[in-house]
Image 1 (cartoon, rainbow, N blue to C red):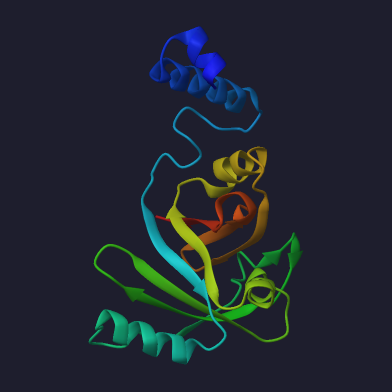
Image 2 (image 1 turned 60 degrees about the horizontal axis):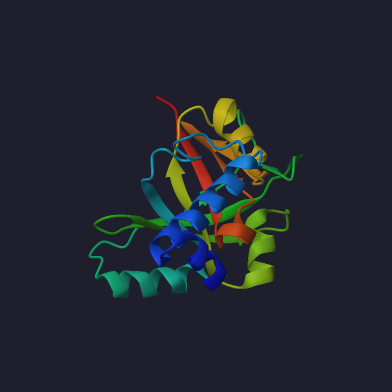
Length: 187
């Protein structure tokens, strides 16, 4: 570093040089990133937490946030028009889910149920109850985002839908410390 500083004259110039080298190396990769990044809309809509006991976890969150009306737990399962796929294979995976609204974001709790394979079930077995994903809304999930994420090194792990939308979990855990969930709500 000192040799570079001597050559370039100051720490600021050195930092600028190193930043340019880093950016050039990053841009040189075929990552599929556009100028605005993979997620130009940077609004995170929820944080998903995989749990082993949704009733207990919900009680704790309700107490923590002072939620007056306890949210209703639902069953998430594949939709006939957009069935759940895990690593490209159809599955009847199910989870108990609930959304807890905070002022600026929602907390989603997911408890995998049944014997079918799913990303939720594997994640829980590997990591225990913990943050699983962050959810972001997108448009044109299949036509745009799945390919962009795959090119960036984050392939689709699990995909499914519901009446009115679809989701895709992208394998970003290793690099980002969390899975990115892409959500598309049909209009």
